[in-house]
Every structure is written in structure tokens, then in C-alpha cells.
Length: 60
Picture 1: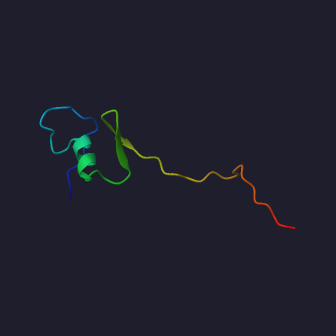
Picture 2: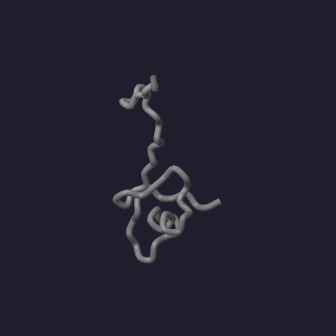
């Protein structure tokens, strides 16, 4: 199991093993997470909204 990523990148050189930027670049970041502005954030799931504006047309 890979190490748990930090919540915020400390921007040290060289990057530590738990750095979220390094993990994202290497592809070892856990599924459902991404990095924005050097911070670890959860990705929102694409939930479908009920009552969408598109309607189905019935051919007559």
C-alpha cells in the first residue's frame, strides 16, 4: 500500500515521498483525489440531476 498523501505540499526540494504533487505526477495518488493550488482535494462525483432541462420528443 502506498503512503497516505499529505493535505498540503510543503514545496521542499527534493519532494518528500508523501507530497501530493509528486504522487499525482507518479500516478500513485488515491482514486477520488486531485491537487489544486498545492492542496489535496476530493473530486466531486458527477451525480445526475433529476429534472434535467432536456426533454425527449416522441415521433408522431
